[in-house]
Length: 274
Image (cartoon, rainbow, N blue to C red; front, side):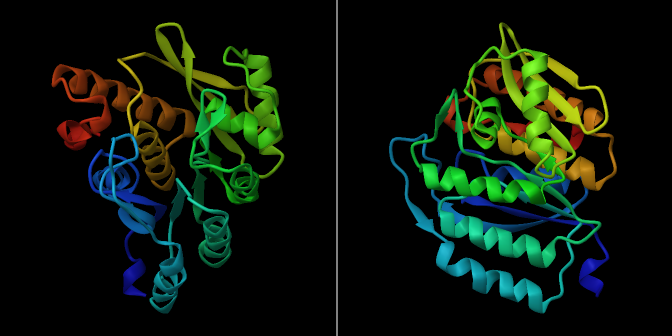
């Protein structure tokens, strides 16, 4: 089919009109890396939930009909990236999507957005977190933070886990399916580390100096670069370094512009340099 003459990544996430996160971050990042980004929204937000007020529409009841139109077009995807999912029903829909669209040459990146700092996000129920583990076997690449890695493996959360402990967690995750894992955003004093695990290889650590407070959408930029680089054939550790370095550069500019924390990171300033 002519539709499939260009590389494509399906991005399953919410759409946020303001705040630079989710699909609104993935779409320009993946496009700048010369891959067509095909969004499948899970919900639509006027602005993200970090603001005092927001409007949103849950998209669960529309997702199957939306996906069916893609089936009619016989679309093939070189990559699939999943992000925030708002209900157990959406996880079932995503599983069905992966069963239909994940081929032998489709690279699937699962970003198991569930929580941070040892706790589930307020919108997440224990049932939803439990069902998220059902997506892990589909992942070629898994990009959890430490909290999410602990939840998925039933490991007690500890912020200062050493390399041996992180490796054991990654081995448990890898045994479920993914051969490549990066535990992102590990706080180490004035630095942030990304712990890279590839089945059969020695773990690696990519370190960047911490720039300001955590901001909305940073994880979406990170996972989007990882997914696009994978589809473009980049080495995994090089991709993590690419994503980490890009985000650090953007954060420095974001602070220079004195943007509110809620407004995310100003990646637009560097899209031509990604």
